[in-house]
Image (cartoon, rainbow over the protein chains, first blue to last red):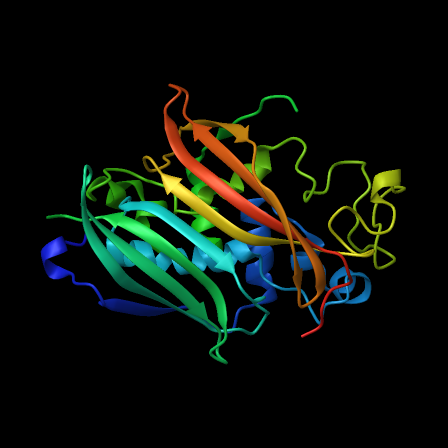
Length: 140
Length: 171
């Protein structure tokens, strides 16, 4: 169900836990689905011994995909006009991520009413792992 | 690089939605999707990234019979001998620096649906540098316009990659 402009105001926000105790297997599942098999995400031996990280870590695009669920759950299927993200910190196996979207503006455009959102995803320590923006077409 | 395209398949969308932990039936259940506003299965907002599967030159996919910089018997170089440019751990791994995805931005012109055949056009992006916590950082931007078989724009993607000059920072 799509959002209607009359039911939404600037400052409204919504949060969702988008992954709990992220598994290495889910990271590998994302590698297989997306085609990005970078050993930094799929190969603990390479990542710790050659690249020098404490363990494999999630693709930024996995965090962006997980976070996208909050946006489509809220704005409705096929309603997004834009979605952008900056990957601020790495996401590690075991992380639990909570995504929050906040309405920053509601605008009249030639596509009708459009909501502009800020988006933040934090890990269980409260550190920001993703920050971004999105916009979505609203019903009147 | 030869022109290539991304044929969008329903099974691929389903597997991608599972991987991002999204149980929305609009990504896999044709029957349920038919009664939604979009009228059929669509792809999640970040699905265009899975086009990498169809890029013949994508360097983060092991290729049959070719060198791969991930571990095998040893911690790197699991397959065949390294070509000169990959020696030392591969283009994005190991060695003196590491390449990471810094930003990704999408503009949606219409939802992606099974049956779409999407063709990329790359546009010149910017490059910039700055000093970061882990040394000198070089950012480079890639802009890709994805068009359907009719030539209509479907998604515009802008990615930013960052390369560090030093070894990975431990956290």
